[in-house]
Amino acid sequence: MGFKIRHAIMVIGYGDSSVLQETINVLDDKNIDFFIHWDKKSLLPQLKAKYSKIIFIKRIKLYWGTDTQVLTEQNLLKAVYKSKQSYDYVHLISSADMPLMTKEYFKSYFSKDVYIAFMDNIPVQVKQRIDWYYPFRNVNVRNSFGVRCILNPCRKINSFFRIKRIKNDSIIEKGTNWYSMKASLIKEVLEFPDFKMFLHSYLADELYMQTILRRFKPKNPAVTSDSELALRYIDWDRGHPYTFKLKDTNELQLLVNTKYAFARKVTDVQILKAIFHKPSLR
Image (tube, rainbow, N blue to C red; front, side, top):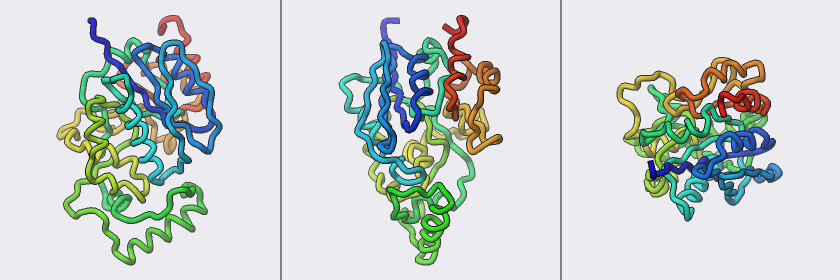
């Protein structure tokens, strides 16, 4: 084939960059580029590739649970959309994700419009993530202090005043925030007229892409795992999510070049080296 499919891997990163560097090593290819947002609270890493282009976008301070996550995702999409290079697919990962495909398998795998996670039976509490107003942005609400002194009082105020920011007939969808999709859909996402509903929100990154592209939600999904729909191997049974360890290398090895593009969550770079430095996978 003369036509080469080009991929843009968008990375939300922070802290240690060793896993991301090894991910780049595995997928290093002239048709796979990396667009990276590195949390401004962390030291900017020195990443390198032989064939892939590495593009860092303007950094902001990222706070889990706040709308800074959605804003960062949007900024990554804008960077890909405005790039002089055109792309066929975009993939959102974190710096704690690892590939479960060799680069040749990765380049040949994708054919559908979207690989986005969708969950069924969305409870009202999920809708309140964007229906209610959360004034905080640059604060940590992940620890016990943040939950007790910021998040819970905010919820009580919203409930007391019966705050409703979105229309009753608005359809909200949910799933893991990591995805792969055709780059031709970026324009539709960026031009979504009700983007403000995701601002001053809580954990809206799990609603953002699903709500905008909800027409792609499978009516009769062949798989029951929302993560599998997104081609992500995520273990919610052993953790929130579980962080894979070196002893899990064989488990991950068996999934290479199957139905998962990436595994999450991985912080030990030795796992990647043990899997992808084997001669049979080169």
